[in-house]
Every structure is written in C-alpha cells, then in structure tokens.
Length: 87
Image 1 (cartoon, rainbow, N blue to C red):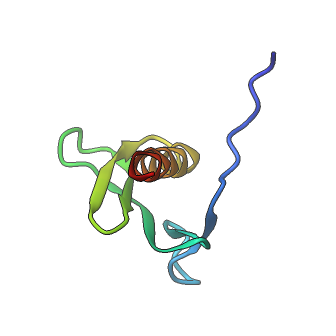
Image 2: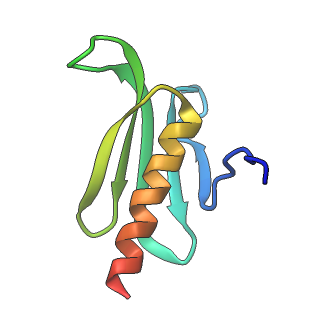
C-alpha cells in the first residue's frame, strides 16, 4: 500500500483574491460549516506556521501546522469528526 497525497474533500478558495496566505473552506451540504486557514506567527514558537480553524455552530478546534496541506487536513479532520459525532 502506498501513501497517497492528501486531497481535500471540501471546497477551498482564497479568502481574498490578493491574499495567498489566507483560505476559506466550506461543505456544500452544510451552510454552517466554516473552515479557515492563514499563515502567521505562532505565539509559542515565534515561527511562521499555518493556523487552522474548524467551526460549525461552535468552535470545533484550532491549531498550527507547518504546511498549508497539513492545515487543510487538520481542519477537515476535526470538522468531519464533529459531524460524525452529531449523527
């Protein structure tokens, strides 16, 4: 079995056309889904990392990762975990 690269399951786009380091994700089946990513400095390490946030009706989870794909993957993972618990 080979490791395939992560492929987002939800819809993603830049939050603003001129901002390459900010993105918004959404689930077309759930208008309350709101996922965000942005590149910025972390408070703890002081380095430049990707901040991700997963929201639905409430804040589900947030955190930092080293790459944009890891941020998207974490946001989607926490969103889907939350949705699956609601069923």
